[in-house]
Image (tube, rainbow over all chains, first blue to last red):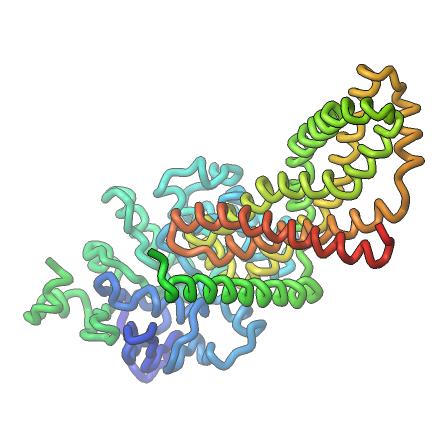
Length: 246
Length: 260
């Protein structure tokens, strides 16, 4: 699945730097995600993964560097242009981040608010997304009525509702039991096949990385320390790299 | 022992917070008058704040009128001035006691509710999720809540005042054999335009303060679940202080225009 490097990446981060006072969280991080690829990013807690994601989705401004999504540098876009571009991005939050005061249906309809879709169209998309995660029956439930695994699935359905070209997964299996984690990984694979998306997966879960990745980047001290396939990295003798696979 | 550095830091923090809140209020005015408008969410918030506070405001108003009349009766009777009861109670309630007490009750219910709700949305990344989905969370969550509070608090105060007067009339009817019709005739004779207008105007400011402080504290909440508790708690404390400051300014300004 690794794409030839002459194809333009769908997502490109170049020399990203971000500091909080004297704490240099990202010190020149670079990443390229190609179409149809599942790229796994692994890093220890505090290595700058969350900061990188926040910069990527516009929740935080980087100090230096560029972030290009589908050829557009997000740091140079107006808010309106960036919001339009955001419809091409799906984001699965670590804690699911479902809106407590809304039903599952309203949660899924929320990203479509700016799209001027008819009620019929919205419902069709909601049902399609719920079918993809196997939770059509939960359409009228409130988030408090869902289990942890169901919440993650609904959050996944919300991430794919607009059929984005890129999906970013932030720790998709963290906090789930092994069986539910496997189900989520399988869903991620199915979604990649059905929707032909490119995925950037931030995870600590070695099993998840082994099953889903086409390529991996290891983030250490704010820079990409190593890059390669799961097999290449897991057989590398470097102690710092090996620490991820123990 | 409190050092001068600690006092300095506290003062600095206080003024920083006032500055941030002013900036927050400025952003509210900027976002409130630009499209898209979130009418559906505004109506939902009006319903939540108005309808769900009716019972509490009603009970508070009723007891307020009842107790105020019961406590004032003996003193007025000493001077043979019990016939002044309707006018004294109505002017006190409409001008001052009703708006302030009901606004304080609403600060406890609505402002802390907003602080806790937005705070928990912040720490569970729901606000981030809204932003990532291309929705402006400030407009959707903050503008609608401040506007709803600004519109609903005056209505709740009017409702509370009416119930308080009813409570007072009930005491007069039971203890003083004054009919409801006579009581309310005297009330409407006593109350003037200069009593109603300043009270109504200041109640809009009360509503704005309740929505603003709750939203500010919740929207900028940090430090996880502890932060949510702090946001909710400090929303009530700051709102209550702000209500008294607004009340003082309102009375001062009213005195200039209406010579109270």
